[in-house]
Length: 210
Image 1: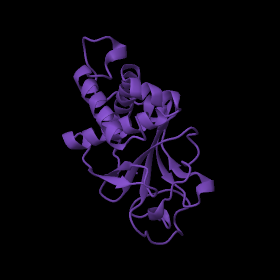
Image 2: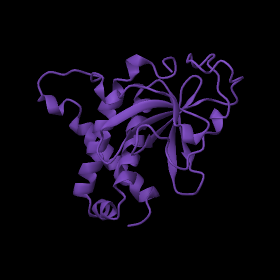
Image 3: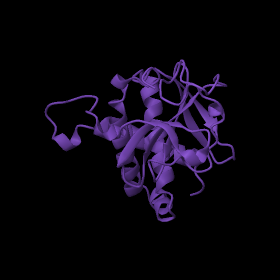
Image 4: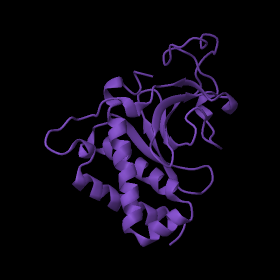
C-alpha cells in the first residue's frame, strides 16, 4: 500500500476532505437548488461530487502524482473519479460504516490478489497471481466527516477489507501555516470558492434535477 499511496502524501487527505465537505456545506447554504437537494436527502451526493472534484484538482496541480480519469457508473447515474497510481486504481467512496465495503460496488480488479509485488500481509501467500490492477478505496464519511481510510477490499464483499489504514483524519496537516486561527488552516478561501463553483457546475451538468 505504501508504494501506491505513499505515507508522505497521506497528509493531503484530511486537508482535502475537510475543504470539500466545507465547500459542499457552503454550496448548500448559498444555493436554493442545492438546499432543495439536501432536503430530498441528497447531501451525500453533493459531498461526493465535492470530494471527487477536490482530489481531481490535486492531480491537476501535481500535488498527487497520479493519473486520473472520469469513469461511468455501471448504471447510467453519473461518473466517478478514478485515480491511477503506478500499479493500482484508487477510487473514493463515502460510507456510513468504516468497517464495511460500500453497497453495490464490484471490484473486478480484485478477483485474485497476492502479496507480491503489491502487498506484504499475512494470508496472501497462497492467492496466486494478480489479474488486472488492484483496487484501493479511499473511504470517508459519513454525513459528518469522522473518518477516512485507505482500504484494500476483500473479493468477497461480506468479508469487508483485507487491509484498512489508520484513520487518516488523525495525521498532521499537509501544511502548517502561521497567522490564521488554527481552525482555518485547512482552507484557502480562494480555492474554496473555486471548488464551490466547480461543484455547482458539476451539479448542473450531472445532477438529477433542478
